[in-house]
Length: 269
Length: 109
Image 1 (cartoon, each protein chain N blue to C red):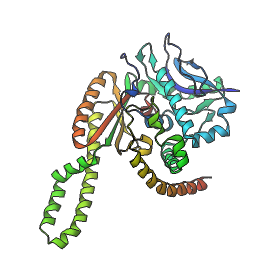
Image 2 (image 1 turned 180 degrees about the horizontal axis):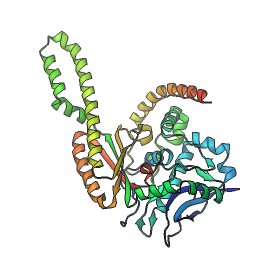
Image 3 (image 1 turned 60 degrees about the vertical axis):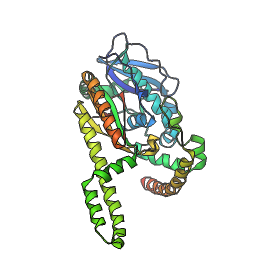
């Protein structure tokens, strides 16, 4: 028995090329399934395989499997978003949605039809971009605070005026003050960055800070943001990113920008 | 619409970007079957647990996502010594995490 794995939905296209990426099972062909002016991007999968306990277990435990399938899912959506060299909007599905047959798929499309149309409308001519900031050089960042931060300077003055024995204990307190100020300054830098880019976008969202184990970087992440940017504003958005990148580099922060992504962060409803 | 390709590899895109989106976000539409995948937070814990096991770390590579040329641009040359030190530190912490996760899972079932 075969089921249908759903990758994404897009508006009906004309003469769209076949999608060459392989399906989630590594072999299935990708089909374009037209329905009421929409197109569902699907591939056939074995229900025995994908409905099995074994598969559920892998999805929870086998990181290599998750990696492979996650990338396969993403690649199909990316290809479905290109039509004759142009980028088109698509509503991406979360990983792992399978229908037993066409009837079930149609039922689902029917009951979600208004919502899907609304979401497609909201992302029309817009692209999702990702901006992440990392604390690249904490020494540099801390140094700037030691030199410029008023609270820290006050504390230092206080210590300098104390007898030597007392000053020793105050040093610990100073360290704490510096750590606090570093934390506050990091938060406010991230907020400023987020807000400045929000002004260049139609919508923005702060995503979860990802752990080092996931990013594969030694530097801690300080901001993880997604922006929905109108096509007409992509250039000014990127320009703003470049400007901010320079400014933040001076402070010891590193900015990464990537896109366009499928609009995962702006299509949930 | 602009003449454009999906250009994710332009800058330091890695697996985290993909997993974060594919597993955690996206539209929820009722399918007959849903593969219940580990969410992104749980995934982080699982990765920690995996690095705790030296065999597994060797087998998979602690930074398996960095070694995939499609997924990473500008993967850093690793400082093995530091990596080792960090690994050892993680081992201890992971034992604790593992216990916690086991307790949580026992509760959940």
